[in-house]
Amino acid sequence: MKLTPRKITVPVETRQCQNCGHTYQGKVCNMCGEKVFRDEQLSAGHFLHEIIDFFYHFENKVIRTIKLNFLKPGFITKENLRGVRVPYAKPVQLYLVVAVLFYLVVSKVGVSDYIPSFGDHRYYFLSDYPALRWAKPLDKAVVDGIDSMWQRKGRKIEAAIQTEYSNYINTNTGTLTLKRPTMGDSILVAASDQPVMVYNIMRNTRWTIFHAKVGTLSKSLIFLVLPFFALLFYGMFYRKLNMYGSALILSSHFLVYNLCIYTLYALISIAPMYINPDFAGWVFLPFKWLFYETPLVHVSQLLFGSKFEMLHFIFWMPWLMIAFKRLFNTVWWKNILLSYITCRVFFFLLFGVLKKVLIALTIWSM
Picture 1: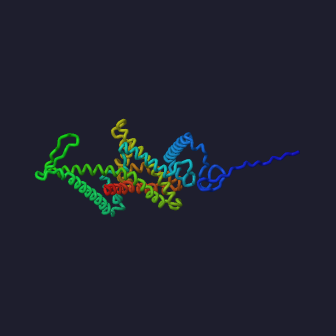
Picture 2: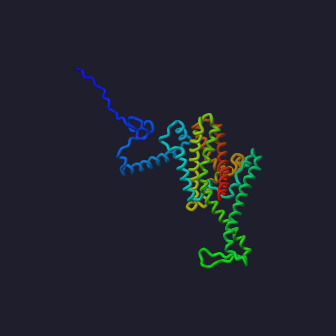
Picture 3: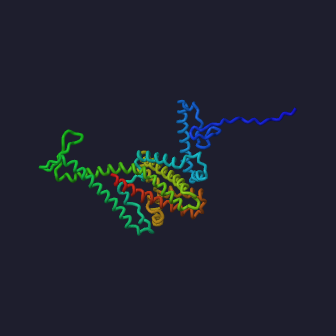
């Protein structure tokens, strides 16, 4: 008697999703992604396990993505564009994490080109480029407008201080009596000295308010660079980047690299107390000497502008060239040209536009 094996079918339990009501088989709803719920998930041990699991996998993803973004420019972007996303941190998620880390570091160290001081609006203009000298009146109007806002804000603060102190002025002698904040006695301010005193108080108050507000606005408006820079990428590679969202992913990864570079620079800047009085400047000294203290100086000024701008080219251009080659397979001369244009435009957006916008908005909101 010949026995023939029979195919045994294991019954699969059919479930109804608690979220959307869809009937499905397996452990995950194929309509909304809701997982099967078990009573064990309400235990304290499972709750603790989920916390540890989240931070462990999240940290690994972020660190791995940052590392690959440094060592293999354009690789993470290419993986995202072809649909491989699970092993890596999401672009926006990565950008938020790195931005928070960046501002935590620079707020402690006190070194950042993303947080402007009043006076930074007098640098980096359109008219600095030889082909755009015609824009000089526009640049002057921007500077004059910001300076005028600064003066009007000063007069407003000065008037408020004067109003506050008017109650303490002796109408007969014109003298102002102020009590010392840390001592029991008082000081007498002559009528002729009051304008100078009020002006000095106004100036200190204005600086204090400005620096408190500009830091907060800087953390918010740094995200405005992302869509504008993505627009630049999309304009250059619109035939290969099918959608604007693809350019946003590339922009996110480049800005993550840029923020990491600035974070490292901020950390290097605290090294002088241990290594060298001017360690950060000493690191870039060979580049400054080669490009600006040799017969190459005129070519360097034409190609890179100031020394400060040239230092950004050193970090940005290699990353962009490798990323463009990996993503778009551009020929060498086109790759160099597009990387160069990107560096110049990004530098102007960051230091010529964003800083002026930050300063103007800060003064307006004071």
